[in-house]
Length: 308
Image (cartoon, rainbow, N blue to C red; front, side, top):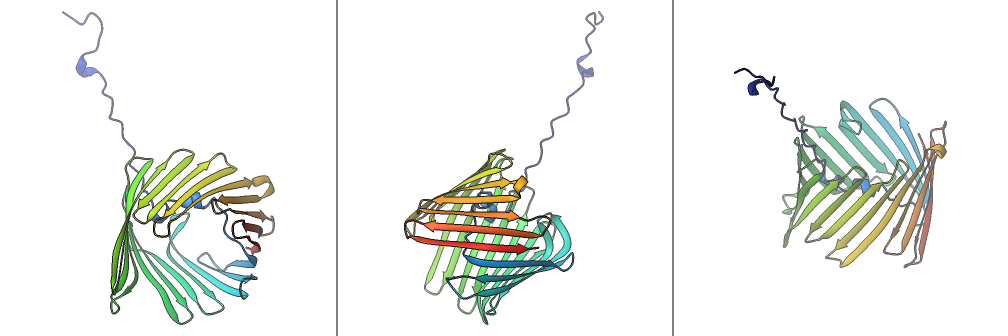
C-alpha cells in the first residue's frame, strides 16, 4: 500500500545541523579585573603640571612633564616609548619599551615582549638615583579561554629573598570568569603565602567583580547607563589594617562640549572631581581638579595642560 497521505519517508526528512557554539573568550589579565570600575574615578591632582607630547615616528615618541607643587620641589620627567611592528590589538604592540626618568636621575622602565603567539613576557625596573629598588619579571600565557601568569619580584639569591605571584583565570561561560591569586614571599626569618579567589560577571551594561582572600576583600560594580554616563562603586576591606573603604565614582561625557567630568565620594569623607576640556582644533587638553577630605580638613587642587 502506497503512501496515500503524501508524507516523506523518515529517512528522507532533512536533518538539522547541530548548532555550533561560539568558543569562550579569553578572560584577560588578572590585574585588569577591576579596570572598568577604576577608570570611572578621577585621578588625584595637586599643583600645576605641563605635559608636552611629541611623536617622532610611527615607532617612537617622547613626552616632557614639568610639575610644580606646594608639597615638594618642582620636578621634571622625561618619558620615552618605543613600539614595534607586531600589533595584536589597538592597545597591544610588541615589542614595547617604556622609560621615565626624573630630574633626580631615578628611572622607571618596562619592556614587553611577545615570545610566542600566546606567550608574553614583561620586565620592570625601578631605580632611585644609582640604587635599584625593584626588578620584576612576568610571564603570561593566554589560552583560548584561560590566562596563566607567573611573576617574580625582587629575586635575590644571595639574600635568599623573593616574591612569587601566580595568577589564573578561566572563562566558564561567556559572562562568568573565575580564578585565583597566590602570593608567596620569603626572606630571612620570614615566610608566608596569601591565597585570593576572584570572580567576574559581565552583563550587557554592567560588570560585577569580587576578590576574597585571607588578606581582605575587594568588590567593584561598574554600570554604563548610556553613552554619556558611567558609574562605579568600590568596596575594599583590609584584615591586617582593620580598615574598610567604600567609594562611589561617576564619569560624565559631554561630546558636544568636548568635556569629560569625573567625580568621587568615599566613606572617609573625601570628595573630589576632575574636569577635562579639549580645545580643538588645537592639540591641547586642559584639566582642573579639586579634592577635599572633610575628616582631616585637607584640601588640594591641581591644574594641568597637555599639548599633543
